[in-house]
Amino acid sequence: MASIEDYVQGRSSLSPDQIHRLRELVADWQLLSDLSFADLILWVPLRKDFKSWPTGYVAVAHIRPTTAATLFPHDVIGDEISYGARPHIDQALSGAEIVRDTQPEAMGEFMVKEETIPVMVGDQVIGVISRHRNSELMRQPSRLELNYREIAHNLYRMIAEGTFPYPDAGSLFDPAPRVGDGLIRLDVNGVISYASPNSRSAFSRLGWVSEVEGHVLGDVAQSLARVRPDAHEETIALGLTGKALKRVEIENVGGTIDFTVLPLMRSGDRIGAIVMLNNVTELRRRERELVTKDATIREIHHRVKNNLQTVSALLRLQARRIEDPGASAALNEAVRRIASIALVHETLSSSRDSSVAFDDVLDSLVTHALELSPRMNELRIDRTGSFGSLEPRIATPLALVITELIHNALEHGLAQEGLALGIHVSSVASELSVTISDDGVGFPEGFDIATSPNLGLQIVRTLTENELRGTLSLVTDEKETRAVLLFPNV
Image 1 (cartoon, rainbow, N blue to C red):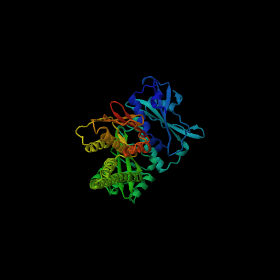
Image 2: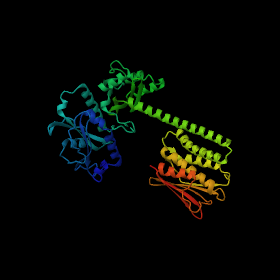
Image 3: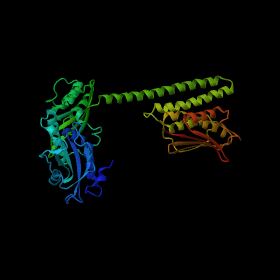
Image 4: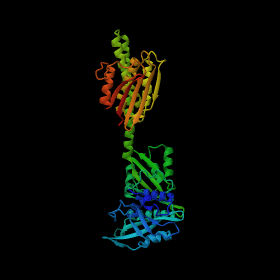
């Protein structure tokens, strides 16, 4: 979709800061459309500088109301009109004032009333908003509609004065509050002068049994926020006075309500505020469930790690009691493999992420492997590259594979003459490559991993093909022996 810059590039005198201001307006103007029950179109004058009369206008944004039916079934973004074709737009641009007293005009089967609002930055008009409403729906407005329209007029006046959108609002409107979720109107003293039906329902869910209008909003919210500490309740009351742009949340056993406070200004003076309500009870419940689930998963990983370490200790104890050297060696190999799996669970139990920081796991794997080698002080480890974070689905079999390859290099390749163990990790596209190399004696002539009776290498081949969906190749040359593991990291 084309941006505002695309429509005005080379055809308008707007600066980057002014275009940014228009983007801020468009980001927040669903509120304006809903309050005024109207379609809004943002027009940018086409001219070479601010001293020149425009040759026309281009529509750079269009928003439809959620509180009324749209009058434009098709988007008008990108449409252009010539200067003089829409006198109300010309008048708002030249006079830098809101044009309201217009006569309804026929648009298809509707009589539509158009009003225009200049968008001001400093003393310059950088755009014009045209507001289009069905005049038939304006004849007998309800109390809700009257309040919404009055609030809308205040906000449009702030646009014409350059005070809306609010500067430095940041993430206050994320997620954007919606008129239909509940709206409260405050006077200059923070007293509720109007509360929409949905806002009254929200207070009822929190336990407020009487009418809210005529009460100070901060006092009402403070009395309802029973589960909050006293100090925080005072912060709630101060945040809901309507004096500043704020987002406040209150909670009790009845639910959780989010309040967005928007001060209303006129000629630099505060004349009141509107407060948008959003019932976030279900959202907060789900967030707490996720936190609880996350803590539970970490606890499970911690217990699995402890159980694996217990099994490892029992096997190690059994190995010491067995006189058969072959059986003792087999148990020690099982201990080493269990320890590799336990390392992954230990990492997951101490992390708030669902992924494994595998470089830390690799550090532990190398340390443990070297501790078992009688030549620990003679060996040199050359390591390059990094894994980053991996999914547990990949981390567990990878830990076992690397353990076996390192152990195989220490036991066979480096047992006699080799002194260097290399671990190289690289990433190409969505594939990871791991190379374990040594400068030892290498594999015997005619060696084939597919037919090798070595249990460790059989485990490596099975895990590589079935769990990692990768390939393993063993290469021996005059300088070194390399085990190259390649698998997708997806």
